[in-house]
Image (cartoon, rainbow, N blue to C red; front, side, top):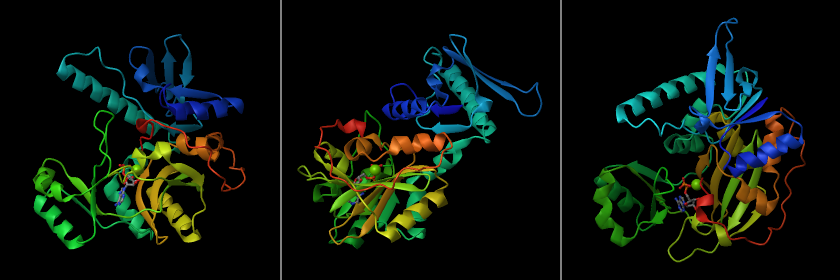
Length: 339
Ligand SMILES: Nc1ncnc2c1ncn2[C@@H]1O[C@H](COP(=O)(O)OP(=O)(O)O)[C@@H](O)[C@H]1O
Ligand SMILES: [Mg+2]
């Protein structure tokens, strides 16, 4: 059995599940938000050292999770504790679930994981990614992460007259902060970095943004060419009008991306690179469970199918990606391009 940890509104999970079903593979969508009301979990140590793990759905169906051959750590949900209204009890209950579930993943270590959760967690930290990327020889922008306004001013001064951008570690659907150019007017706001650290970087000019989706050592690189809207330097603001085409990376960049994945212990990753007008390749980040449908749907690069093959334990036998013209650009709501 293949276990996909996500939820029914995740189009990525559903696409891969469809691929698996077409191949006749037994697959379970494990939506952790079904816990605790609509599903139960049991870890049973009575039958020897290897516990049986039963996930029972409301209709009585029992899924033996200990038989999982592969697990896709895609969009794990939190158990739905909305009925636990007392804040202290809520915190306690959430923590109990957290402990139980984190222990559970440790029991599934015989399964093949895309990606193993503790590695995924460690690899998703931007601070670490920039270091490992530089160590494997990828070019990274000069960067300062700081909550110290004086350090920020010093960085900006050192880079002058080069432009500086600033960006956040993450965003939520409610608070979406794209990468922005630091303008003269922003200098007066620099004291506010003390509230929470900010990532400052040298501005890297673009010929194209690249999204390189990696599935077990196989690269699916795509170029995203876009014309900036007024004042916008972040491709996600412009992706609706962008032309997306399959791309071939130079051999050295290809190998360094593979080395990065290896060092981070990732089977899957969606990597943001930028090609400058001088044809230099800069690394921005790896999204450990990054989206790929906006690439697949506009280039026909067979990413979902490669993920399904890997989960099913089949060799990735598809022909190498061939660059092809992009389909007509389609409008796309910005928030579908999470990360
Ligand atoms: N140093 C930079 N110079 C120019 N543009 C950048 C820089 N860093 C990020 N961007 C733009 O902003 C986008 C988002 O930044 P990224 O580092 O991928 O973080 P996240 O996607 O988590 O916000 C990039 O894909 C790129 O379009
Ligand atoms: Mg990004």
